[in-house]
Image 1 (spheres, chains in turn cyan, orange):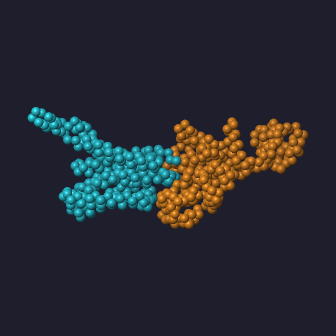
Image 2 (cartoon, one colour):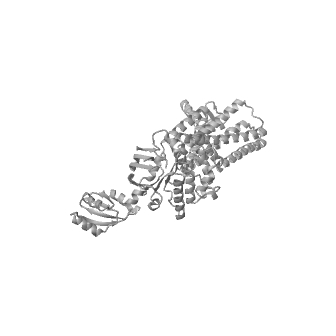
Image 3 (cartoon, chains in turn purple, red):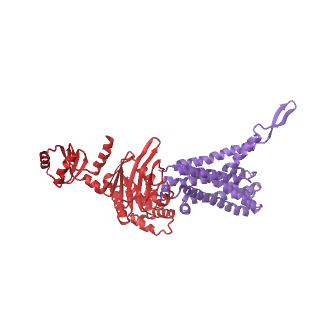
Length: 273
Length: 304
């Protein structure tokens, strides 16, 4: 395992795509803070540095989908995964090493983003007025849902032999999960009641009636679980400012365990050409 | 005889297609074992199984006496270097970095061997060049350098000369001979280029329709292919005393066929046999090539 990790880390350090995405992360962080600073000066909007931290969740899914598909997928397209098996590395270790390296890459992008946003945000919008514990818990939540995304992408990349197909699946998966979670979030955001306008002889009368779109209690619970269990759902909720993310890390750990275990099981059975 | 790789009754099915059918294999230590067969005969499947890329349906194989189901097989695999179908190289890395990557995977504490390996395969001058820009021959040589990175005792090469130009073929041939002679590496090489294999192999395994039709050493094969007189008779056993009395070198192929390897005068032979009331049905002169031998071997089964 240490040899597999060392070799993959050496390779990712030489990967232009990896560094290209790192530069994009910095550009994204700078653009976010600078545009917010301009808005504040123009419209007197109030911004808090801590609110920018979850923004990485908007792009990290795409980053991981791309880097995982290319980095892990090239093991199949170049055939180098064969070398690892032929020289006697066990399949579980090969899978785990790829997952760990992708998690390290994910962690690197998140920390890079938080570093840039944290420093620039503190300079422009003042220091973070939250306890260290709460800040760390938020960062941990972001890291874990991102690693959960990586676990799903590694699952696909390790079990789909074609790099092109695994790239398409991974990117589509991010888009579908994001869109699906946005829809679910939209349903959950429905107000319980709505105003109905009725035209009477006295003029227009507004009456508060139950919102037909408002989900039942059971459905609300189900939707909330869906949003908490899907990493993209967590990213959406955290960016909406009103999430109770106490249990998000547990959901993320669950996703990581399920997808990694299933991925190892399938990869062990996989016939490699 | 000591075998580095042995297989017994290996079977592998892909849906309804039997890629390997009760196949046996014996690769002697220090040999260059040529696995010969048409495209689709099962050579690559056999190599994939031995390399652990695919699972065996039934049967078993041994590497240095370790059974494929034994956990120890993973450790034994570190003594194997292989190229299966195409050389496995990272195209975005240089030749040098590809070898370093392999050495890192093997847990090598130093990278001192890199230059030697590049030199061995004739890539010293292009070590810094990206592997993606290499020609097919250069990729093949880099693939071999990677396969050799862990100083393996066994090198498995699947169709290593496919798509190479004549110069590339000669380079690979010389490299294989050098590795076998100088480094004493046992080499299992599959190919459908019989002529090319005949220049390097010390042992042959003829594979057809997933079965091992025949395993034979080079010396045995040369004997089989020698210029000979094929004598068709009613009862081969009856001819033996005469042949022995005349110090004639022969081989009984079956009850009715004898191969004579000595230089003899055919009219005298027929006349002598006739005097002894031994009937000769037919006399043929034959000398085989590897190709003929292979075709006869496969044809004999096809006609069966």
